Image (cartoon, rainbow, N blue to C red):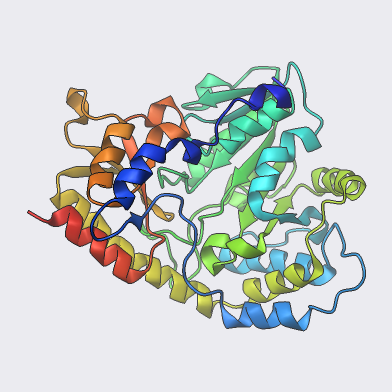
Amino acid sequence: MGLADLSGLPYPWDTLGDVRATAAAHPGGMVDLSVGTPVDPTPAVVRDALCAAADAPGYPLTHGTPALREAVTDWFARRRGVPGLDPDGVMPTVGSKELVGLLPSLLRLGAGDVVVHPGIAYPTYDVGARLAGATPLPVNGIDDWAGRDDVRVVWVNSPSNPTGAVADVDELRSVVDAARAAGALVVSDECYAELGWEGGAVGPDGASQVPSVLDPRVSGGSTDGLLVTYSLSKQSNLAGYRAAFVAGDPRVVADLVATRKHLGMIVPAPVQAATVAALGDVQHVAEQRERYRRRRDLLLPALRAAGFVVDHSQAGLYLWVRGADDAAGGSTSRDLARTFARWGILVGPGDFYGPAGARHVRVALTAHDEAIATAVSRITAP
């Protein structure tokens, strides 16, 4: 399937017109817990760095400044348990979504190539494969793809968007081993790694304990055939900056850099400077995590008290919610979204993320405290 074949595929959020209209008609106004866009201020340390680098008359470096690449490797060592990462294996990207959507094309995949992604997943994994002319393969586990000779890329997403599920070291190592045996590239989308809530997700020093695919316990100490994509949108409120990066196998990154030079896909120099500042400051990350924790601690018990079931949701910015009658063939995700809309709350139907999500909705924590409190009062009202 090529680009022309995607022209008839609506953007999922554009199909919520009726649900959005119902929520917007609530007498108290709409509380938007759908898309998950950050609403809190961009940290001053980041804004100051952006301003200081604003005089940027020359072209920025596609590969990223040495300062940026060193900042990423240092961050992996301090915050993700990945020491000794090669700075040559780091490259900034224009947000993480562009990499997810364009990576199969940048790798020159095409007909006959298979791109594996989770069965419940961010839809851009699927779209990116189709744009390249490759075949997307949603899977429930390794057994669905291991041993195939046509698999070229295996996407991992932990913590998951939308479910908030976290893969442990053993799970990740099994994926890496199977992919290496198949000669496939593992690409791990870890954008929510700093936002773990359960199971010892944060260490005594405040660093994330959510394992990375580059963790030596997973990778065997080698980045061969492994990439991680990461965004500062969530942990640092930088969605408007499109500040992100990819890191891992230097040979793969070198190929991506060469291709992107031809295409002019470059992160602006002030954003690269802001990225360095964001990665070097721990305080604002801790403060933002606590904001989301506070909101989660209000929403989660309210949903359960109202009779909903919250599955997974150990990390990230979302609660993965279904009706308690699900086992008896209960409400579809669209029905659940309409239920929330009648309370004036807009949520994301789970079918946006694949057929396996058709009985869940995704409820975002990305709203101001007052809006979260309003949503809680409506959910729990008698």
